[in-house]
Length: 401
Image (cartoon, rainbow, N blue to C red; front, side, top):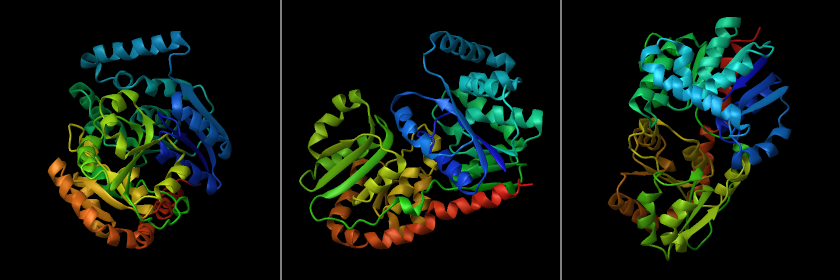
């Protein structure tokens, strides 16, 4: 079978796509990838990753300011589409351009290429239009992966309406829909209530078991860890850091990701005595690194970004699979996850007082938490990508000749 994977990002910033891609290659499928070259730190990691992937063709289209003239043309086109959108919203091309120029950049490239695929798998909302358009013109079926609930992401009211419109109009044409959490699936189905539920499936953001190695806890300070693509403001660190600092003689927090220096200078620096900061790492290296710690912080917020309330990030699965005890904020999705897997951690409301109570409980019970690390490590294997990918095998088999 020949599969085209579409993304509006690159592989490093879209690890969900990268896992699917590897699995398709393991199954012996012929695979092409069309994505976006973001430049910066992620491009450097991508350059190390790509040689290990035996794809037939991998193309990442630039969206940086070089060449400048192309960037200016696409920027102007996107801004114009947003100005015209209130009177042209019936036009899908204008709607998707107003959402993201990457959508038409991908489609313009795609329509000029040979399309001999049996299946297209589209990740990220800007790929929905090109996948739908290709399917409409060639008859090639497409799967769309709802990795995030896009209308619920933080954006303007007009942008939220655009996203809902695109999903309501185009998603019903998908041959299958996968979602990154149960609640994302539930809310997506509300947008397209007539879509058959047996053609929607949750694929969790977990990782291969082999990317983790059980590492016994060490005595000494309690080792907390948090990672993200970027270490920046309003990602939950402000909730926990003042509380952790009260116990600076007993705790250490490692942050892993691309550090925003202004965030460090304006906020993190005051907590430097308990902080260790490490740069972004490739997925496998990061997962092995996580195994060294005691407690993983899953600090999603009940904010204006409704998506963060209903998503289950790769972060919470990575902590679980590393055997860490998870301290999670009380978003609806994370509450459900911890309630269904109580051995893995605890949930705390998003206040300093609640975090302090949770932290005191961790400190008082650190001996038990450390002794149960292997039990958590073994338990979490039921959540692994090794199991999740079998769902994909069954879905993809529907499209084999």
